[in-house]
Length: 492
Image 1 (cartoon, rainbow, N blue to C red):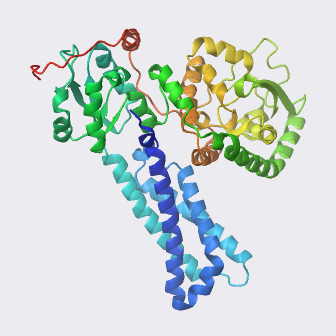
Image 2 (cartoon, rainbow, N blue to C red):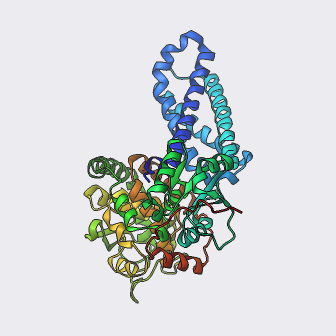
Image 3 (cartoon, one colour):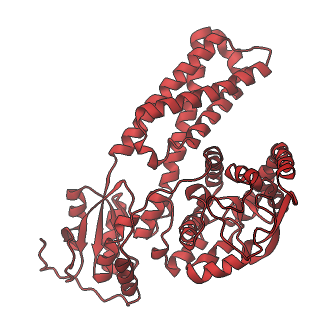
């Protein structure tokens, strides 16, 4: 089933809240000017509207950086949100004040700034109360279509991959198969439409094996034309949690994912975006690199810059440049994973790593085309060779340009193990399928948050029992059975 439009629902909601906050902020200052000057405000509006828009963008951007649009922010109450919004409104108001003073012909008065700030804060607070209410009370009920042992085994993976805002209502049976586990049976496939209405089902899940059955497809199409989503579990993970569980990936998924990004974006628009961002970043980052270079020289003997071979797109190797953060000869005993509180890292190097200052020189590689601004992190060839043997689909990362920052970097903490590399790959594969200019912009904003907070935090994920995974993988290899509906089947 084609679920491409559904998969972007998360980012649609993020964009909608982003735009709503920006609109409310701008509207508040326009209203303040109209209240203050009445009909005489037209000239001032024309002169100052760019600063209102700039302030609105800064307000929405800082609100996103504070993670107030995230589905994981449901545990942040009204008091915490209200305090964060105060800071965001003040920062955006300072942008307007600075802009209006640059336009010295008609500066805005304190009365307008006070009214606009107060009105924008109240409007944003109401908006975020609505967001919080939706996050805490929106619960989507999910039903699974079960045709055999493999489908039943996959229902047990739902607890790990399903998402916190989803509720597993039960299963709908097709054919004569009777579940062996403790599953709530909702009914038979012939009554699917009635079951969906009775149980208030928002989504119907099925395995990829079900999609080859023409009878099931007819039932699924009826639901989709009624507005009910029908999708495999892997698609639900993409939409609800924005990552792709490796356990659920198939060759069919990889083929469809590789055809998602538009070629014109990858070849032209993304490259233009990289050139502009890297050029601006090199200019703005030059003072930080200069200060860091001086600190390295004064505190640690050895070169200022560190050069290391990394693999780019399609495995092409290049020499990546970073500010040196470790002692000289840190790998004299061989290649090692970087780890938390790594003893090889110098005192200054720890600070540079925490705030990503050591990576600023990599902007030169973006400008030269070796890297992209956003993408999977470039890894060392020997580590790629090692991980490719232990992590399935790991070499898929090499199909796109590596990046300074990426969805994996802002979504998962710094990794120092094979398991961490596996988890990060799940986020990289999500980005590779859904890459777009909008997603790149949001990742850059997330990067600002990571820099300010000192690192990403992993969201707790339920762990599926190893025997369940092994059973599911064993059944996955078996050919799909020919299923014939049993109209005399009774439900519990």
